[in-house]
Amino acid sequence: MRHDPAYRKITADEFLEMDFGTDRRFELEDGVIVMMAGGTEPHAWVQGNVFAWLRQHLRGSGCRPYGPDMAVRVSETEVRYPDVSIYCDQPPRDDLTDAKTLANPTVIVEVLSPSTATLDQGTKLEEYKRLPSVRTIAFVDPVNEMCRTVERMSQGWLDHMFSGTRGIEIPTLAIVIPHEDIFARD
Image (cartoon, rainbow, N blue to C red):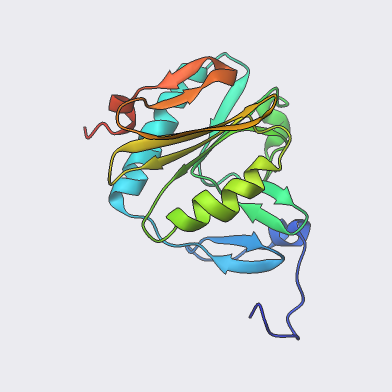
């Protein structure tokens, strides 16, 4: 579809108003609707572990974690659904009942899959870096049980490449999600 001259690229606003009426998931990439790959059990489990830890530890902090149903508008022609995103200083939840995306994510977490690792750590990483509010981008590899954190610094981005047991460091929020909690199997 992308190369078909009859296909009109759409905007993020148009995409967010669409009801796909299916259990399949889609993102908007350069104005083109693309289907997201289905997840695996290890992917879903690790995403759940990260989200649950954040929900418990951010309660009352003014920051809220969201799962993969909350969109991140990365441009006027791109919409992504990260596995976990954290938003700080948002309006009260009662004011957000119809929100499909929120402004100014602070943290983005992507759980890697063999089929999406290159896209996540390439295209999506660069898109997330362009968002001025984003301070930390983390990648979690459930197969090798390793985490990578990319942190915005005053002079640019610092990439903490994959490490065995460090977990996910989020300096902006003064938290570290422990490795053993990310990959807990129970």
